[in-house]
Length: 168
Image 1 (tube, rainbow, N blue to C red):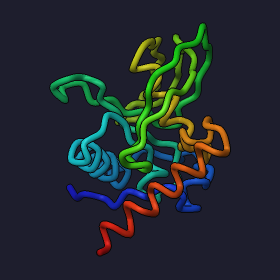
Image 2 (cartoon, helix red, strand yellow):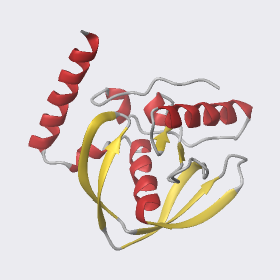
Image 3 (cartoon, rainbow, N blue to C red):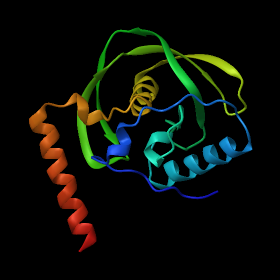
Image 4 (cartoon, one colour):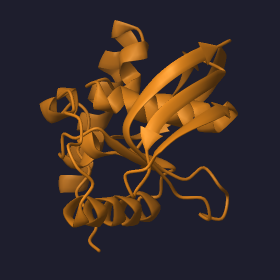
């Protein structure tokens, strides 16, 4: 396993729309393992392949307190949504920035698991938010896209300042 570099906003590669995974093979399983290691180390609760500059429809997440429920979604698609909720979201690609985002409260999603077996899942609360957030990455969207242009520019400036401070 290896830790992968995480792309940071406003890197244009975060805007790449991911392609469907054609087959679940050992290379993909290795990528999944590396993505979990990267996510847990960051630390985060979700990571889309787009964020590590791999443009395939793949995401990993674990919203448990003790990192005991790793989940893999290959070629995920949302089948149903219901209600709405506002959650304060953060993102490994937008470090140190948090903002309220409105998303569906309940979702039903279909995907393949790490072995390529299809499954469906109903999710609500944090799990539903996390799935929707990571699926946005696969579509080339970042959570700051939900913010006003002024707030998005403030985020861009704050990140640039953090990067300059880190480089100094």
